[in-house]
Length: 243
Image (cartoon, rainbow, N blue to C red):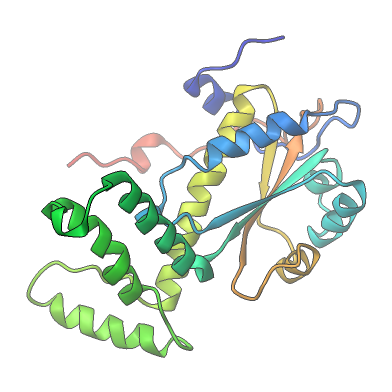
């Protein structure tokens, strides 16, 4: 068995594999362990507004392949992982953070330090101010208020419904990358797919209206023709600015 790759080796090894070897199975438990690494990714306000659906059932894999528009990365995948954002769960996740800190501090509230009070109030007051919305209207009102405040001092401005959706998807993307690098480290391959009928995927997974599909990730071991050519990146200097 090949030794696990270093982080840099795993990053270099990872490619978006379009065709997986049909004769090589992958261990579902190892994939699950890579998903445990996914949830260690940084996440906005530690709200962890994500879920991961690990699909190994043959019937579901076929249905998911159709929902993924029949592309080879889904058709030949041995397993699939669906990364889902759950902005609608902000209340539950904020409450979980509060409970964590209260257990961590383990003392009467009147004995909290200033920093400890801030941590608790962040989830009791600030998050309930930013995350609620009603048809996008409340978000625009918050946006207007925060931008008026921003005339006088720096202020957080990403308070509209669309902004918070982006925040949730960014966090989910970071988790997905953790997962794919972890898979590469053990010699497994992945392909993140945006091309899917997300409504069909949601129906297959029986997800509520507030859930959104971030990406579907095909999993397996690359075939000889699994990578469609050498890696292309624009020159590093075109994307890098030192200030």
